Image 1 (tube, one colour):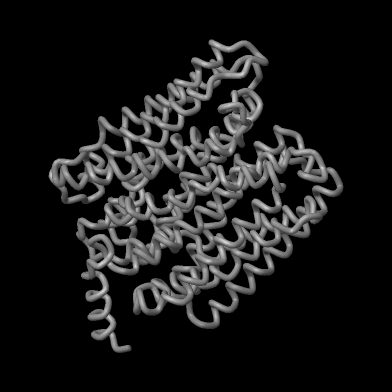
Image 2 (cartoon, rainbow, N blue to C red):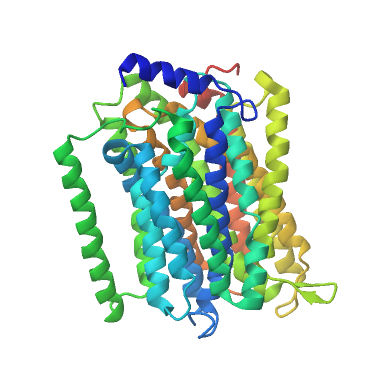
Length: 499
């Protein structure tokens, strides 16, 4: 396809409004987001319980090890995404990366669903999920951003739509949790495998029709020979690291705790190193460099908010099973119901926030202001959790109200800040680093997970009030600072909306 024809096709696709006022491809991407969330959240909601459930139903690990493995995996997914985003930008292209990812992910869930594989099966499944991240990184977010021309006001709305639809898929944990209670964890993982497969099949069938030339080629391609060398090097490193880890763990040199702390400490510095690489690259233009610099405070704010989130997926998930009253109308429900509650809140509050921004139009808060407000709400939710630890004695089952209130405040904060952050990162991304910049932004998740892993070392039963008071207070303070600086940050990032 000649360049003029390619540009014409891109403009035509970007001008479409057949899916809720957006290009049709956003509908396909939304379905992919939804099935990915279905599989991922359906698995993660019961995985921590599977890890410390007694053999043969579970893996028989300790609760502390289970919590740290959850945070560690979340951190590694994002860190491995950095490699995947590089591969998408320079080797496979966004669409090629997503195509390969669509082939790998279902296999990972299928492996986890097979009974009798034990810890090796768990390790292989997690390894395949991480490999999927190494292939594609944040290509899905990057392709969403590429569906719009620079300055198209629909961009924020597109990320909000995919956020809401993604959380429709994330409502599944109460289903997988109930299946796990009735039929075992492997049956729950099998349902995740089915949904992952459906999402992959639909994307593979429709991608050429919906996206045309958008994302078909790498944004900053390596020479053909260098591409082959890069792929071979990646596979070789994976093999060496895998063998090394197996030996270190089997010989008792590494433990879950020592490995988690080591990786978490190192991973705190990786996002900033990646930012320095992008900022100092000759491919980054001076104006692009300035815009990225002003994104950094928002990145820090997002990382602190994610610290709160990963406390919810580890320590508070275990708290939900061990210390919260789960009996409703005489029947015990799965603690995974709180994961579904999060998704319900996300769809509800996400829709409300999206509608509010649409109604306010140019009067809506700036993107950095949204980040500040959202982060502060994460902190307020955490401060709420101080109350039940003061009210209930050890061994007394707490009212579920407190976790409901926590998740309500946190999800409102997420609905406000998450789409704004993704949108900001896609806008300031240098042309040569479009997917990699989305990965750097997403590293706020890994930084938050790493902080959560490290902070968990200070968690002590009987001292929960001080623990959550400190986390909540810091988070509220960071959110307020971002809000107060929002005007300067918006101007520095080159946003054109009226401040």
